[in-house]
Picture 1: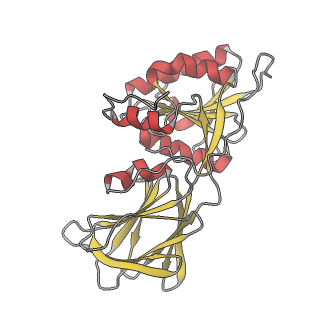
Picture 2 (picture 1 turned 180 degrees about the horizontal axis):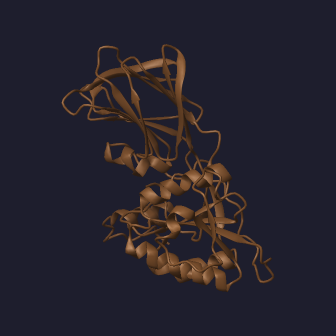
Length: 317
């Protein structure tokens, strides 16, 4: 996924926890369908409990995890992470986006450990588990905020659905055999009408996810912006757009076109009837991410995409 910090707002390193209180709690979320995640969860739980830090997990996941009695079980609600110091997520991009739901609602920073493939949202890899536990115990991490999207759907002028996204909100065709006819809009003015597979509206964090696959640009974390990227558009002018973070993007599904569908982060979906209007603006509530490293986004981009950099000499000294 992406490293698109909205405001790149970073808190300084947290105080060392040599004399930390024992009432600290970490919320752990794991992809229990992966054996690697189950084994990783066991290591993290053991390490935290030995250091006097409480662990909270979802009751629905408890049966799939080897958990000692000291672990707190909670129901799967958006507020499940409230009161915790940190949310540690073990899994791929899908699990990390699931964790973002809990993080956004509670304001608890999310620390991702990548057990999938790319894992742009993750801060560590599976081999770093010991380091992750140590950094959590000593509070040796920083927190940055990532821009989100607030999304609403109108029909005949009435709001019929509201949602949010960390990566992107995409308006897509529902039927494979038919194009979706849309008109795009920025700040109340029409930009272009075209038929195609749809439109992706993304944050900088989402610029290396779906928007990237659709031909959009990679946006650096420090840049505050909104992206609008057409998907397989049949038009002369249907290029990716980068707008102000204060802009309001809109996609109108034309009345004569088949129904479309709205996807938020590829996780939540709602049908869009012909004539529906989707409005996307900067989210009022960011997602907070815990960071262990000071590596530049450029280095992260090269590493995640295995970009060839042989022959680079660097700036002259």
